[in-house]
Structures are given as C-alpha cells and as structure tokens.
Length: 324
Image 1 (cartoon, one colour):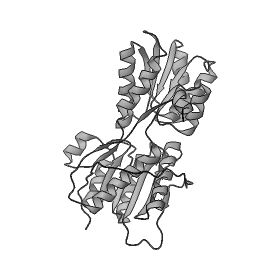
Image 2 (cartoon, one colour; image 1 turned 45 degrees about the vertical axis):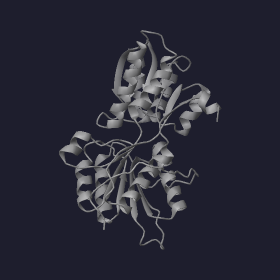
Image 3 (cartoon, rainbow, N blue to C red; image 1 turned 180 degrees about the vertical axis):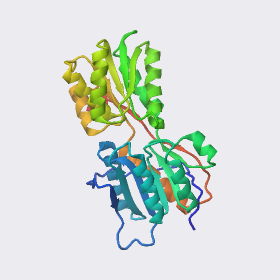
Image 4 (cartoon, one colour; image 1 turned 180 degrees about the horizontal axis):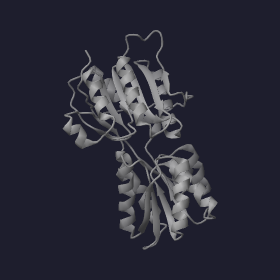
C-alpha cells in the first residue's frame, strides 16, 4: 500500500554514469510493456533547455534502464519560470497514479500545495535540487525529504577561489537566480559571504532569472553602470555564459573574471579557454538518481525515519579539469 508519509534513509547511493541520449520533449515515459507491476516514479524537473536538467534526465534514464526495477516518467517545463506548468505536471502525475514524485521545484513555495495533495493521494514525494520552503512545510505539517547539495557552501567555495584573484576593495557584481527559489538565495548568500571575507565590494546584485539571454542583458547594464567591476558571480552556468557574452560586447573578455555554478559542458570549455574562472559541480547526472533511490527505499519501507541527505558539490577549475 502506498503511504502519504515521505522519508529518506541516508546510505550508499549508486549512480551508473553511462551517458544516454536525452529526449528533450516535455514528458517522456521510460516504462516498458513488461513492467506493469513495478513502481512508477515521476521525475519532474525544470527546463530541459538548460543543459543541467537534460543531463539530469539522461542520468535518470540510464539508471532506470540499468536497474529495471521501476518505471520512469520524465517531465520537464520549457521555461524555468513556468511554475504553473510544474503544478499542472504534479496534478497529471497524481491522475496517472504514480507511486512517487521526485521533483526539482521551479519555486520553493508555490509547489507545496500541489505536493500536499499528491501526498494525500498516497504518493511519496522527494525534493531534489531546489529546496522547498522549510517554514511553509512546517506550517503545512509536511515532511518531504530534501536530497541535494549545500548550495551556500558550494557557492562560497567558488567565491573563495575567485577571491584569490582579487584585492581588497575590488568591485564585484552578482547575477542571482529566481529570488523565490531557495537554491538561488543560498548561492547568493554563499557568494556574499566569500566576497565579504575577501573585503571585495559588491556594487550590484540583480536577478537574471537563471536565463542566459537575460544575464547578457543584465550584465551588460551592470558593466555600463559600474565599469570598475572586476568580477561577476553567476548563480548558475547559463547566466555565467550570458556574462561572458556581455563581457565580449563591451571589450572586457580579457580582464573580467566570471564564475558560475552547475558544471555544464559549455562552461567546462569556457574554463579551459580562460573565459570563465570556476564553477561548482553538483553532479547533475546523479542528482535525480539519488532522489529516485530515496523514493524506492520509501516505497519498500513506509515506516523509515524522515531525513534529508546532503549530496556532493565540488569546485571545478582549469586545474581540476586538466587533472582528469
């Protein structure tokens, strides 16, 4: 019997890192005709146009194919800001009578009511990537485990590495994610902590809503208004690439320091060429797998203790890439 109670037992979580072609459609069902009695798990992500989430989907699909223990339905939205579509996807998965939902919410509060309804329907919910709002969960008396990295610590490690290339009093700017997303707020806090420790001056901080084109626009404005800016700290790699484009447009490609977060392939290339200084790897290909493994344990043992699990996040630089 499915239980409304969500939980997670920390333990050895295994990711099979074989790359698998990702279908970029908004919804993909990875089940097969012989698996009707297997648990059905829905993965609900943000935009598959973002390489980080397409990589996440690939990792989940590979895990499902290798394990053969469950059916997998992969869902993604076209725009990271399309919260209403994510809410609709949760409702669709409830109607589909899935056993578990593993979700990377586009917004930390707006998804909670729909997830509460899913849990009332007996569906297990596991939160990955962007943490749901703890105060709202407590108010709703919901226990939804979070499986993901310490975003603040990861961002601080990136900022600390950047600080080695700055001097006290240097001007810097921050490209924030969505201000309603907990991971965006946490990464901003990590960047601020590292810059404050280094004695750098944060002269501007604005949201570029996770999007490359928006980041290009915002960073261009920042550099025009504050030509003294020595570095831009971007809360994800898409925005870091937007800052690279902005730097090029104003003739700052050679001296502006840029860092990001996510470790997508395009940023690895930019790091090797010197256009971006560093990023953080939260192992997107494994993140959904960690959540799926957690959901499978919940399905197997509905009485297990509710706990969060912190997953790895590592600093990525030219040195670390060349050492591989």
